[in-house]
Picture 1 (cartoon, rainbow, N blue to C red):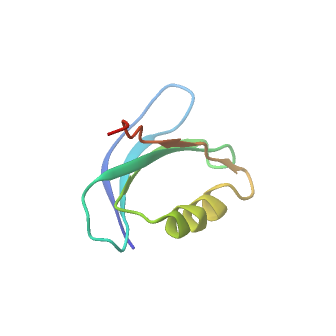
Picture 2: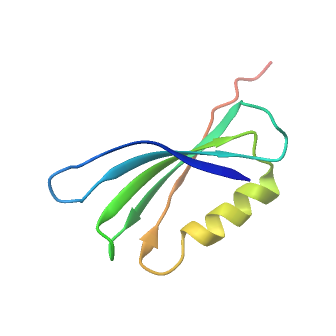
Picture 3: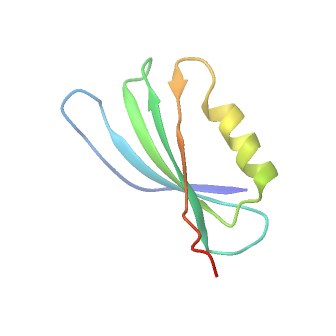
Length: 82
């Protein structure tokens, strides 16, 4: 799994917001979901874009991101019926 900060900026009450891309093992660049994290202890938030992650990888990511003072809802990409 590769993680890298793409962009960050300061906001009023939360110190900063970062945009992070997490690439899964499939190697696909397809967006499968977005995780919105808020860390109340650090007073920051991140938007994590999940690229090509499997269900198992998403479960692992969510277990790490939803621990301690962090909260992280997952927004899955809508896949239209074909």
